[in-house]
Image 1: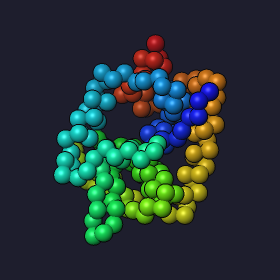
Image 2: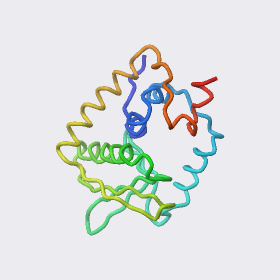
Image 3: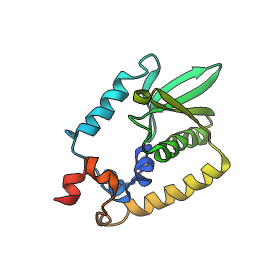
Image 4: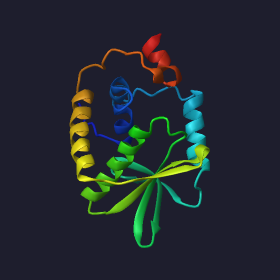
Length: 166
């Protein structure tokens, strides 16, 4: 098996659905015609156009990248704050990965539809949690098959809905 990598997207889904973590890591693509995926993609593409966008560094992809007062600021654009805890940890993971490469920065979550922003700070406590989560994600993705589907409120709008529940 090829060396599977943890990504920010896997961190995001870890806090929502562990089955989805396995599916994504194994290249099983969600329904790209799903209206919620389309809406999220549109919001990401149309928002914050003045900032540098879609920077890839190793296994992370940053939505927004800019310099403010000599400091690097990275941003993550989300269509809503519904899954704010997942979004915080995803952005914290990006900050942590940058820090591992010797790049200090700050993070901001952006919710353009809600006209809301939130700063994300990488603390020692968050680093400890991320280390634990990364290990658990690796455990999940190296399993021979995904966990059985488990009905959660997110399933209704999920791009894997038909895959899991057909």
